Image (spheres, rainbow, N blue to C red):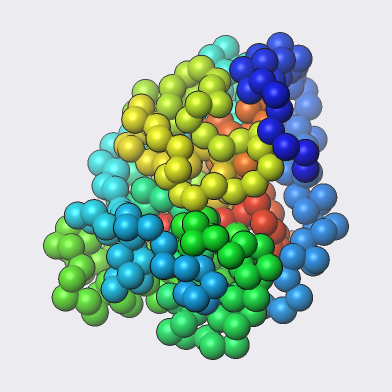
Length: 335
């Protein structure tokens, strides 16, 4: 991809001027058009990794002082980088009257543009999972994968900042493997913050957020179009550029719940299979998936335009895909 445009403000303004909101009649074709770009991923994702991926701490570097080397490179704050999202309802989906970039698959139903979803309280990661964090998992569990991931990182960068880049190029099962491993570490560690320990002991688990948990965290209680508010801006997110940035590198004091990179940087896979709205918690949690199921990813990436970094955008991908624009963040959830 080419470098960053000469004028970000001009580019964003032009995208909004040129954009034509899809009509309702587009139906399922509009829904699939949003995720059609994943087919392009398939054509080159096999070149990103030859074998199963892995990461080494030596390749990733030590990371910045924002992360704790003696605690699996989790964030150096009171909750190890997790943020509590309070229980309550939020508005899910898009209203084209408020967001003219809305896609058809963001519509709640034939008769309703948006819906209300009630969620219990949960925790979500302030940052996307980093190379160093995933490396700690591989160092403890899979030396062969660690060696391969070391080579991939070394080829991409020798900079210490690579430790704090979002980990990408891994599959959904590998993301879930990291989540299960971290769940066990937090349960066993005497250093686990009391609030996280209480949640885990009451039945919560470390996992990926479902798409409702992700969207509530991204848009807050006021139904914002972007994590920072209603208006497009390139001041608060890494999109329309040529590469990843370290997690949290772009400050966003106005972003929902103080979370970083909920727009741009890397797409974030969720644990929800792609299906038409309305979103139903019980169906999402218990559905049986077919072999060709796609899984929802949210937030857009560094290579996307403004329309794909909105809080309601729903992309999707095969769980076996490994791509340099797709990463994840964690949740501690009772669902």
